[in-house]
Image (cartoon, rainbow, N blue to C red):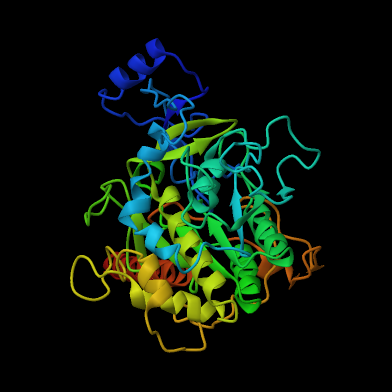
Length: 454
C-alpha cells in the first residue's frame, strides 16, 4: 500500500514550512494508484468467484485516504533533500559499503509490473525499451498505477546526486514489462508468463515479480522453468494479508526455485504484521516506512512485500555484476547463505534464512553448489499458456510461446482460497457414502418384506 508524499516539486519558504509541519502527521495507508476491490470481492490468481478472475497485487489496498506530503528541499548546492534523507533502507542494508564492491553495472533487471515511467528524474537513463502486454498500442501514461515505477526506483534509482530516491543497485538497468492494468491487476496468468519469457529473451539476468495470487499456474510455472534453464534469478513477494483471501504464500513466490521475499517492519527484525509468510519464505527485507518514486516526478510513502522483493532483486543484481560468470543457482545460494539470521536459529517459516545482506553476499567466501538450492528440478509437465480459470480449454498443440500442450494439460484448476483441491478423495468418499446408503436401504426393504410375509 502507498500514500502520496508529493506530486510536484516546489520551493519557497511558505511551502517548506508547510512541508515540515506536515511531516509530524502520522502516515496512513492508501491504495497504490487506484483503489481495488476489497479482498472478499477480488479473488487472486486462480481463485474463481466468477468467470472473470482478478489478481490483487501486494502493496495495493482499498480506499484512498489523505496523506501528508514530503517535499523536496530547495535546489541548494550540496544540500540533500528530504526524500533522500528518508532513504533509510540504504543505511540499514549498508549500501554504501556494498557499492565499494559492486553497483550493479551491466546487469539488466526485469520489472514485470504496472509499467515504469522512464521520465522520472530518478530513473532517467536507467530504463531500457520495454514491452506493454496490457495496451500493445501504447498508453498516454507508461505507468498509470505508479507501482512499477516505485519498484524500479528501489532497484536502480540514480545515485549521481544527493536528491530523490536512490536504488540499491544504482547502475543496474531496468527492463520494464507491463502486465498490470490501470486497476493494478491482471485477468490471465498467460500475460505474466509471456512477460517472463520475453524478459528472458531480451537480456534480463534478474526478474522481479511484485505480484501474485493464491493458486498455482502451470503456465507461469513453465515460463519460470524457462527462466531457470536460461540462468536467470527470479524474485517474488510473498504477499500481503490485506489484499489476500488466503494465508498461504502467494504464487509465483512459492514456485520452487523462486526467491520468496517477505517483509520486515521498518528498520527492525520484526516481521511486518501485514506480511504473508510461510515455509516457502526464504528471505526478508524492509517493507514499511519506505519512500518511493511515483510517476511522473513525485514521491510517496509505500509499504508492502511488493517493496521488499525489489531490495532482494537489487542485491542479486549487485552479485551478478560482481561475479559475472556465476550461475543463477550460485547467486541464489549466496544470498541464502549470507543472509543475517533473525528469529529462531537457522531457517524458519517466518523469516526464511533471514534478512538479505548485500555486503556479505558480495564479500563472503561461499563455495559453489552448481545448482539452485530452491529448485526441486521437477518439471511442471508439458503445459501451455492456457486461459484463466473458468475459461475454455486451451487449444491443442503449440502456442506462440513455443511450449506445447494438450487440451487437458493446459487447463487450469481453479479453487476457492484456502481450500484443498483434490477431486480423487472426494470421489472415493462420495462412492462410499452412496454404497452405504444403498446397502442400508436394501436391508430395510428386506426386513419390511419379511415382516409383511409373516
